[in-house]
Length: 219
Image 1 (cartoon, one colour):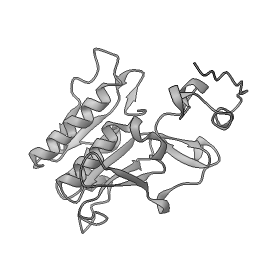
Image 2 (tube, one colour):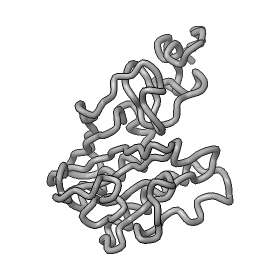
Image 3 (cartoon, helix red, strand yellow):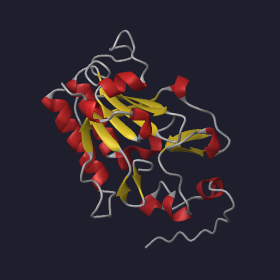
Image 4 (cartoon, rainbow, N blue to C red):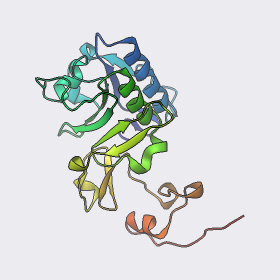
């Protein structure tokens, strides 16, 4: 998932709070494992996770912030050090939110009111391909009672109506007037949502200067 993995190499740091719970550390490991599935370079991913105190300039890197601002100083900094560190978090819910630093780097916050909410949000990010069709906009809310009944809902107020990927900022691209978190497809073979990831006419046309040829075959 670009920009966190780029050209088969780790291009980001996963950051946990210095005093975070063991559950948060395990959650960070789950996210790291999901990212490592995309890594093809043997040189990459050796120092994936750091404590907040080990990252002197959060804006100098792409980051995945695990845990909210109550326990993660890096998350607090990115969020503007809110007076109420639980603001926007509710029991049983988790969030995934994209922040842009203005220099090309981005941060993704993965947080929950409690460990259960955090774990569900992290599960979505670690298995992002399973939820790609609904990871829209810059913030989504994750609900459920376990890891098997997860619901992901875009936060409508945060969704950007776009006309091109330039409207969406780093780490997102424009598709059907909505900003999608992830790397923009470069060919029709990457954009499909149906069986075997085949493209339909609309998906192909949305990529730009593409001509759709119906090669679908039932066998």
